[in-house]
Image 1 (tube, rainbow, N blue to C red):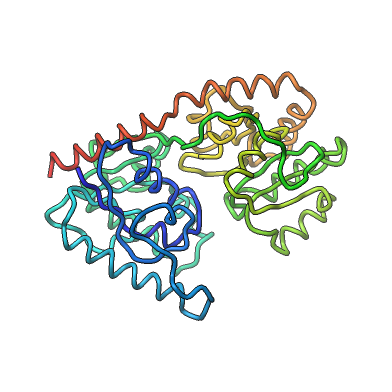
Image 2 (cartoon, one colour):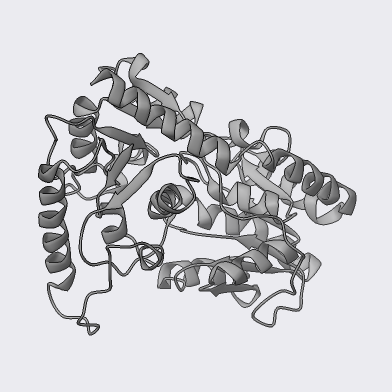
Length: 362
């Protein structure tokens, strides 16, 4: 069984959950299926470990560089689809460059942020249009959680439920000995990872946490891009600017941040799965999560939940976790146990079964 993935996710992300997902399918499937990746160029950190994609030869940025790279990759993707040297085509995002007529198409739906919060995206954003088009053409559809499947059927009622398979995510991290906190961090800290815009709910979260940082001499540590002027102004207004740090971290530093955090907070309003939950679980880091979206499904009883739209609910949960070492220890233990339910073996076997069903029914 040979599966073709295209370059979309590796073109649109330097790193991130979607490209990480396809990297895992390529590198950790244990021989359950053969893979090929089309496209030519990518700066994605995962693409560097895959055969077929290489960095663009001109390192210096210039006007139109991104469009040029995308155009080259799209041409290569479409050509690979037309060659039909594969059994299943599984595009890495929704903008399918060509729909094969003689091979089955498998689509993975990750979330429904564009549908639930369209005002956060410019009118030129065609993601929802592309998603609908690809879902209509798909032989099988993978949903990464039961909650994602529910949203799929809500927003796209034309989808026949019998075409949908739920295959839960897993991560490639394994348990390891704890390492010291990176970046010279000495004080106890609360951890926030990943994107911060819009539905990620960062500003309301920071506002709820700010008084506790001051009262308990804590830091808020974030990963990702530098703070925007708007974020800096908000943190200053909360009195938390001098207690909030942001770092770009590689995987090893990120793991160390989880391992040494007082606790991890994921206040997002909407997610398809929430891989950072598993990252916290395997790292022995207590997890405090929104009671929204897929979070209760993924974390079960292994997290402390709060209402992400309520300052009082967030602050109450944060205060409990700051004050109770026994609560943090209990959450860390339950998280470690919960992590064992999300195995790479299960993810790959589930995905391989989808490919077999798609090919058999075509």
